[in-house]
Length: 607
Ligand code: FAD
Ligand code: NDP
Image (tube, rainbow, N blue to C red):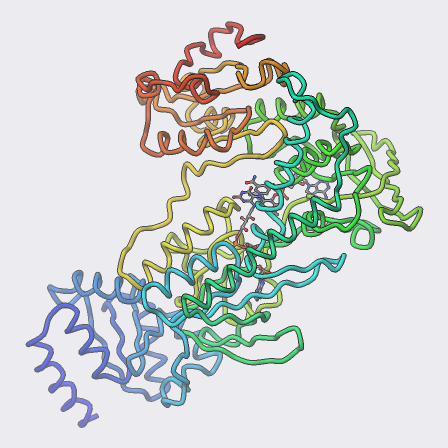
């Protein structure tokens, strides 16, 4: 203890000459164990007690005992992304807070850190999951000069489908979906050609095999580009399944069952989700999901779709567009979480295009009647309160009943990462930090945030900036625009009408709305009177627009721009001040004048 007090004197003498970041660095580097602490903090006391029980001398810098405390705490926050105390360093390496120290103690890593046998981490950042979020985080970190690795592995679907680098969006999500949506719309356009003077053969058929081949070739080119991009950015890529050994080490298993390990100072978990299969007979043997449909090597034929949200309706839309017989089994409502007036309009438009909906209906089993490509299947289901029995003979059953986060079998419990027990998603704070200090999570795997590609990308980029450039911008999950790519697209941003009323009360809300017609469809009378727009205004805030909803051609393109308006706090008068672009669908938003409360008709039968 005598030696320790001499050392302490030397340290404090030097410290007096230093300030700011150089003081923080000096303290960290001149002590084996540094605890930035506050005298009143019970967690700091817990860490100090642990060190004492291990007979490890430590240097405690009490931030509440110096005038510079708040400034030094800010520097620590920038340096470590951790604002709280205790903030612990061992041999210059950031360990984290109390729970991190306790986890390291439990796993044995703390002993190795104290003994100096703990391997220095090979990477500044290892990203688990090479999808939208993971690749964005990795590229940003590499651009900031950090040593980065990405580990990505796709477990085959029960039907055996697998794919390359890029995650859900590129392989089995947004990209193939949008291409199939486009293919279906093109079919409608071709059929309407004669109204615009085109002489079109009356015998128009769709070749499913050709479409799948083209879509898959395009996806392969994207997979290749992702690999190239990782190489160009000097990011190490491992095609292997990752599992945590401790908070700084993962074990990776590749397709040949070869095992290796990687260590990193920080991890980002971006493992996304996979389709959920209800527990009913025959589902995994005979049904497909969105994981399989875009590469299906036979025409799906007569199809039953289970589920009534984004994926179900989008798939129903394009399959019906190819002329297939499509039935959707709706357990409760269409598009849960979305504006229900809009959801019902989508449903009735799809019905007008031939899609059948069976409401209040859930499947109870699937059996195969005949082998083949496609096979003949029978779906058993029950409908309504009386549980009326329903049987449908079809060729394909597609389950779109939600997605499960890929959080099991990756050692998260071993290292103490907290999950929402009801859905298995990772709990993160406003900085996307998990309950383990050096481990972050983004994208579909985190709890309570929109499952969308641009959300995962933005969160990944900002996270790497915060970790490695000192820029502290947080991800803003509000006013995220989205589009459901049904035959008539539905774009929205902000509150649904129901949600706005719940939040602000009916008297505080005014809805401006109208049906409209797209001029480009005038000669073919396509969807006449169906497109619709409504904006939801908050009366108590000078009619600030808090919800924007449009059902019509190219709704995705339109909603993107109006999303900016809502994000910047646009009011009804701003929309009225905006000059429209004529003749477009988007211009309708600039002239909305009929309120829902007036009860006036908004039907449109011509342009
Ligand atoms: P993912 O892209 O899912 O990537 C995760 C990766 O991690 C995967 O490759 C996975 O195999 C891998 N992995 C999992 N566990 C491990 C492990 N332990 N070790 C190594 N690797 C692992 N969003 C939109 O914005 N617009 C759309 O139009 C749209 N359409 C969609 C259509 C469909 C049919 C689906 C299914 C989704 C759609 N989405 C859409 C959602 C979008 O695809 C996701 O929000 C996005 O891909 C999430 O990105 P992510 O990085 O979180 O995860
Ligand atoms: P959702 O979780 O949004 O919807 C699941 C649907 O399945 C609901 O209709 C639900 O009914 C129904 N369901 C669940 N379990 C059963 C069951 N046992 N039997 C019958 N029906 C059942 O999942 P999705 O798979 O549609 O989409 C997942 C996510 O992917 C979305 O949240 C979205 O963020 C993203 N995505 C985005 C797209 C885009 O941007 N265009 C497109 C596609 C996906 P109920 O309402 O009764 O619970």
